[in-house]
Length: 172
Image (cartoon, rainbow, N blue to C red; front, side, top):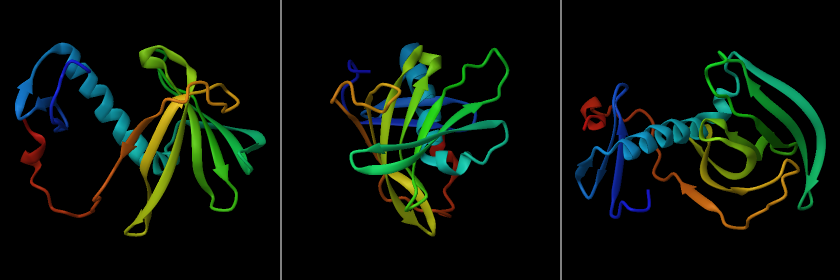
């Protein structure tokens, strides 16, 4: 949303998605659709490693691959869902030393992105849970070769659990 300038605040209260720029609510359909997509996607990527245990996930072992001197176990992940729901494909690169996914390829079928994007992640251990607190992604091919060295970076900071937040914080 390049035309929206200023400090952006996004929210979801379990029913409604909303966005504010510099404290002012924005109600344009395009902005609400973008917030709906990013709130869902950011949550999924934040909790993705734990969600890989959910039912309805298919795994295919693709073998080993060396990237930039590191050896990885490569696993394709796909999802069972009704035909009316777009499902993405993920290709995970698992570091055999740490057992963590250092990077993955993914599609965004709902946005008609079927060529893969490459996501690289760093973890932080918070209250005993490994979370991807740094993510960056760019265009790639299915061999995890970077096509475009322009990266989008996403940072999560000051993560805390059990904060007893007032649910009204998530309302407009």
